[in-house]
Amino acid sequence: MQRIWLARYPPGIPADVDVAAYRSIGAVFEMSAAKFGPRAAFVNMGTAISYSEMERLTRDFAAYLQGVLKLPRGARIALMMPNVLQYPIALFGALRAGYTVVNCNPLYTPRELKHQLEDSGAEAIVVVENFAWVVEQVIAATKV
Image (tube, rainbow, N blue to C red; front, side):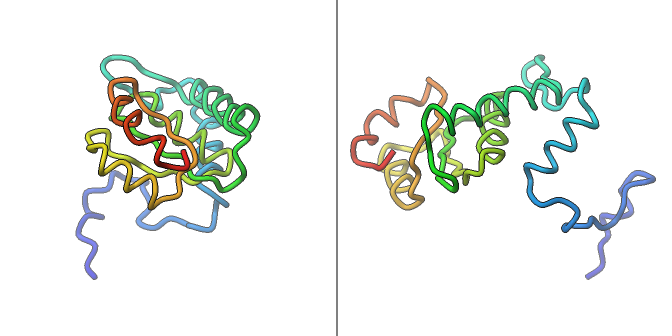
């Protein structure tokens, strides 16, 4: 395969990555937080969150999932939210704690959400309040 996109890479960007360099996505995140601490990791609607803030918030969220909810390692955590700053916090927090993330479209109908929660085996869900009414309609019929 001819990799024509490589011509667009800025100087110094490698064409290949060593996929064995890190044991997990969480390890990549931790390295990035240490390396880029004060720099903006995510920006949404004019608000930025730094790598250092992400490291602290994801660690706190991971501790909540493990210590308060007491979810077993490998549990599936559904995330039902649009592209907001809370999403990467929940995503990396869950991954750092050893959980599997199940992405749920926040525009799902109750029937669609119920099917995905049942099919995925999700045990918990993180939802933005605007979409909680959908979760409320199906949660009793799931393991969540």
